[in-house]
Amino acid sequence: MKSIFFVISVLMLTVSVQAQRRLPGQQGLQATIGKVDHFDKSSVHVGATLSQFTRNSHQWKFGTEYLRKNFCYRIQSIPVEQFTAEGGYYRTVLSDGSKTFFFTAGVSGMAGYELVNRDRSLLYDGSTLISKSKFLFGGAISFEAETYIFDQIVLLTGFRQRILPGSSVNAFRSQFYAGIKFIIN
Image 1: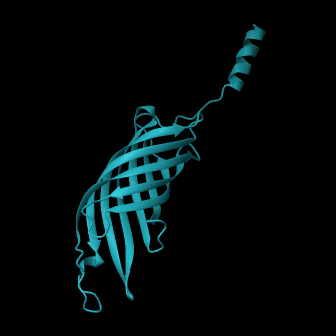
Image 2 (image 1 turned 135 degrees about the horizontal axis):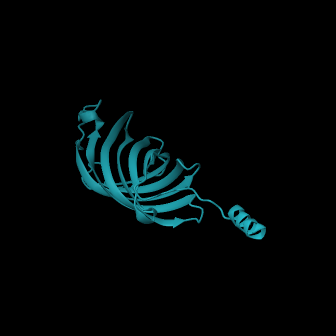
């Protein structure tokens, strides 16, 4: 009897217990900040996203983003701002056995509004902007790497290629970002 108790005790000590991460139905809130178009110093974007995990650690994401890029015109800076909402599906491509690191790829649909020079078409020197503010529709392709710091806190970094053909300035925007995700249930 003592030998059976000893064997069970040794087995319990050697078996590692893993956290309950990325369970179906589990949700997370994430905040991101990053740069646009190859780390251009005159650009920034921030985002907030709600994610919900499905089977096999995949996830649905729904969020909003604010993107700003300044364009130089002689001595004036012309801001182009985009306010977008998105919804998409992210598939886990790679993960480690301990469920600490995940690499995901995702596709999203996007819609929003582009504001060019705060809707002022006349510039300081009398020139007129041809680009106008307008509604946008399109999508994005994203790649993210996530690392669990604790069971409820995840650090992430990623790359996204936005494709918004209705943009009056540039239909393609590359984003590099970092963020934090809090698992809320």
